Amino acid sequence: MTEVEQLLHQYHIKPTRKRVAVLDILTRSNQRHFTAEQLYLQLQTVGFDTGLATVYRVLNDFSSAGLLRRNQLIQGKAYYELADEQPHMHLIDIHQGEILEIQNDALVTQLLSTVQQMGYAIVDVQLNIYVKPQEQPPATVKY
Ligand SMILES: [Zn+2]
Image: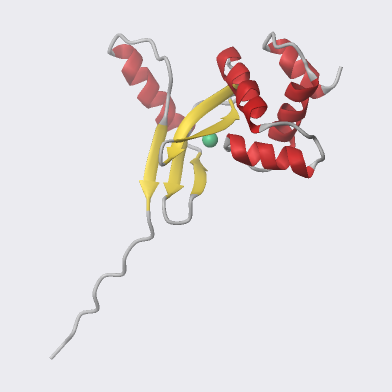
């Protein structure tokens, strides 16, 4: 069994050819956050011919099973990432459309335990901070 097939097995997902192809890209890429369109284009690049609707279906299956986390990151657009790690914060540059992860497990753990202490069970976590380049302060003019 390949690593990808094992992962599908672990989440009780039947390993169809399409699912294996999508998960292969998700696990092997350096990119961590994908839109369905980006995955679709990558599939075309590796010569796997499928439709965008199929990609959406596979991503939905993976999200329902808990294998992927779905985030609305930029302008309400859904981005998918592997849910294998602890929830983390996203820093989103709205000018560049760039998504960075802030790794601060202590801060996130503290935040989540605060929520639990308030008597809630956590259903989903989305910690997104939207930024743009800082504007230069106006130069001071001296007379
Ligand atoms: Zn992320």
